[in-house]
Image 1 (cartoon, rainbow, N blue to C red):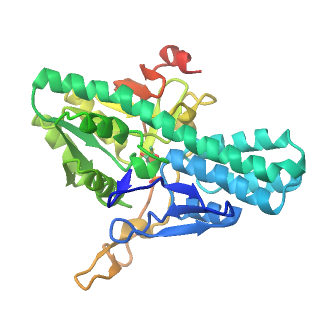
Image 2 (cartoon, protein in one colour):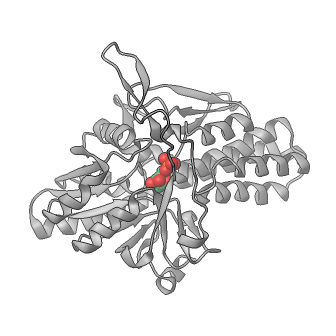
Length: 358
Ligand code: MRU
C-alpha cells in the first residue's frame, strides 16, 4: 500500500538486517511514525501494547521476535524462552501461536550456529507469504463485489468492523483486500466503517488507510449498522478474524457478533476473510473455547484525539468512580456466516466444507 505515494509494508527488516521496523499504529491517524525493534522483548512489547495489531501482523511480528532473539542467543534454552515469552503477548489471535510455533519447529532442527541467519530468512518468508495470501483473498473476495455490482448496477455498499486492512497484515489486508482489488478494477463501491470502540481501530486505522488509497468511505458509530441494513443501505458485510474454529465459529473484534445478527435478520451477506493460518483446528465451540482478551479499563473510560492546538490528548469519558469492562473480542457462530473467504477459495463455515482447507 502507498502512503503519500510511497509504497510501504507494515513491518520490514532494516537495511543492515540488524532489526525490524514497524509503523507505530498507536499514533495513527494523526502521526505517521516508525519504530525500530531490536530485541525479542521489543517485539513482544510492540504486540502487547498494540503498536502492531491485527491477527496476521501479530503472527509475523512474533516470527520476527524469534528471529531477533536468535541474533543474541541461539541455544535450545534461549529458543524455548523466547517462544514462550512471545506467546504470552496477546491471547486471542491464533496467528501468534502459528508464527512462533512455525519458527520453533523450523529452528529446532538446525545447529545453533545456523539459527540466526536461518531464522531471519524464515521470518521474511512468512512475511512474504502473508502478502501473497492476502492478494489471493482479494482476488476471491472481489468476485462477490463484482457480482453484487452486476446485480444492482450501482455503487456497492460494504460494511466492515475494526481494522482488517493493510495495517492488520503485512500488506493488502484480509477483509479490505477484496475491497482494494474491486476498487482497483473500477467497481464503484463505498465502505461503511464501524468506529470500533473502545480502541477505535475503524475510525483511526481503517478510515485512514481507505483514505490513503482513495476508497470512498463513511465512519459510523458502532451501533449504526443495524439501522443501515434495515434501510437497504448495506449490500454485504466483510470482516476479518482472529481465530476460526474447525466448525467455522468466528472470533473477531468485540461487536462483530452484533453485526452478524443484524445482517442475518436483514438478509445481508456476512463474509469473513481470513488466511488459513487463522483456523485453529484444535477447537470446535468458539464461544466456550476461544480465550477472549480483556484489556485495561482505561481503554473504555478514556479516549484520545487531536486537539485544536495540534496536540494529541487523552480525556476521561466516564464518571470517576464508574467501573468499566473491556472485552476485546466476541464469537460469531458459524450459522451466521455466509462464507469464509480464504486464499484457497471461498468455503462454507462448517466442519465438512472446511475439510478442503486442511
Ligand atoms: O485488537 P486488534 O486491533 O488486534 O483486533 C484486530 C481484529 O479484530 C481484526 O479484525 C482481526 O485481527 C483480523 S485482521 C486481518
